[in-house]
Structure formats: structure tokens, C-alpha cells
Image 1 (cartoon, helix red, strand yellow):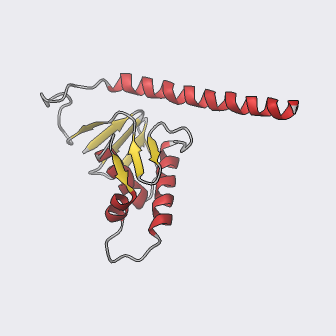
Image 2 (cartoon, rainbow, N blue to C red):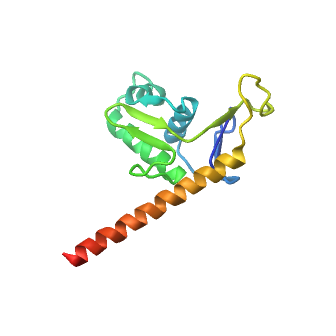
Length: 154
């Protein structure tokens, strides 16, 4: 499968994450987590689902810390922020949801060849998500400036 979202492309056959055509470094566990989230885009992926997908049943590891670390690595690879997510939303006490629009295709399949699913315009999606990210960054900067002003006035 090839998953496309924003400026990213994830190719599950070559186990590669590309950002604007350039390879993004990501370790194996976070990569598996990203693929799981993409495969279930829009749906909540529970922490138990993640544990089962990332570690065999007989593995002895601190799953909570492992899931947290893997999610942190996914967010770093995508340049996402847990406080103002563009790609991965934390669902408190449940898990995570991939919130960006995802175009998923079989490797070598023509886009739009599935009559049950209309062709998506990836360029439009990229522009929209880039604008959303810019707006969120501008909002964060504005909030910081307001907080500094309040601190100076007090």
C-alpha cells in the first residue's frame, strides 16, 4: 500500500516515509505505529491495539512507555505537535486517531480506478493541510505573545 497525506507518502512495500519526496528517518516500531494509524485513519486506535500490533504477546516490556515513545517518534517524524495536532490526535484514556485526509492505494494501482471511491485531489489536500499547519503555528505564536504581554503587565 501507498498512503499519501499532506506532503507525506508512506510506502509499505519499501518501508519508507517520504516528505516532499525525501526520505524521513523513523525507527521500526514508530513506523509500524504510523502504518497502523494510517490503515485506520479517522478511527480511534486504542493503546491495546497498538501494543498488540507492535509487540508479540510473549514480549516483556513497559508497554505504556513503549507506546508513548513510539508516538513521540511518529510525531517528530511528521513534525506534528500533540498540543495542536495536524496529523495525530490524542483521544484521552483511549488511544489515538489519524485526523488528516489519507489517500490509500494499492501499489501500482491507478488512482481513481475504484468506482466506489472518487478520486481525491492530493494537491488540494496538501495545500489545505499546509495552510492549516501554518494557521496553527501562527495561533501558537500569537498565544505566546499574549502570555508574554500579560506577564510584563503584571
